[in-house]
Image 1 (cartoon, rainbow, N blue to C red):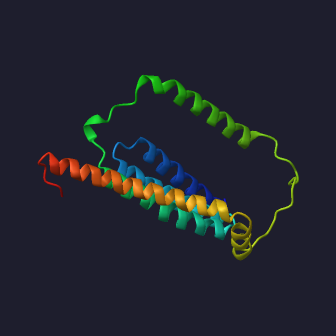
Image 2: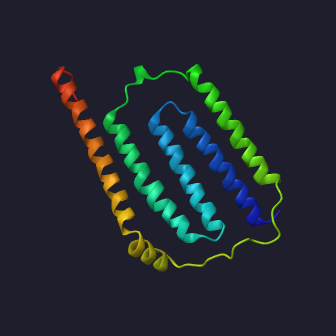
Image 3: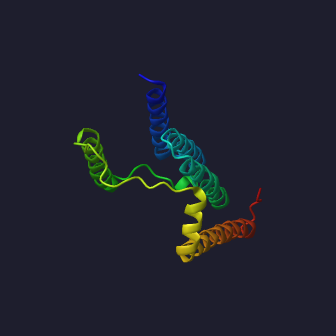
Length: 175
C-alpha cells in the first residue's frame, strides 16, 4: 500500500466518522463542529486528488463561511432542549429507504464496470479563469446567492433579538 492510498483511506475514514457523528449528535453545536471536521477532511481529500482550488473553496466557503453562519444562528436562536424528541417512528421508513438507495448506489459505483477511457477530456482551468468565467457569465446568480445569505443572516438576527425581547418581557435575565 502506497502512502497515497494510506492517506486516502485515512481521510475517508475521518470524513465518514465525523459525518456520522454530526448526524447523530443531539447537541447542535457539537454537530456543527463535527461537520466542520468533515469539510476539512473533504478539502484535504480534494488536495490529495490534485484539486487545490476546490480544497481552498471547500475550506473558505463551507468550513469558513457557511458553518460559522450556522453556528451563529444556532447560538442566537438557542434551541429549546425540552422540545427535542427522539427519532419519531414515522421518519424511520424514509430513512431506511434513503439508506438502502444510498448503499445500492455506493455498491454500483464501487463494483460497477468502469470504462477504460474517460468519455470526456478533462478540462484544465486556473482559478483566475474560473473566477473570470463565473463573474462574467453568471454574475446574477452570484448576486442572488449573496443576497440569500444576507437575508438568512438578517433573519437569524431578528429571531435572536425576538427571543431576547420575549425573555426580557417575561422577567428572565439574559446572558
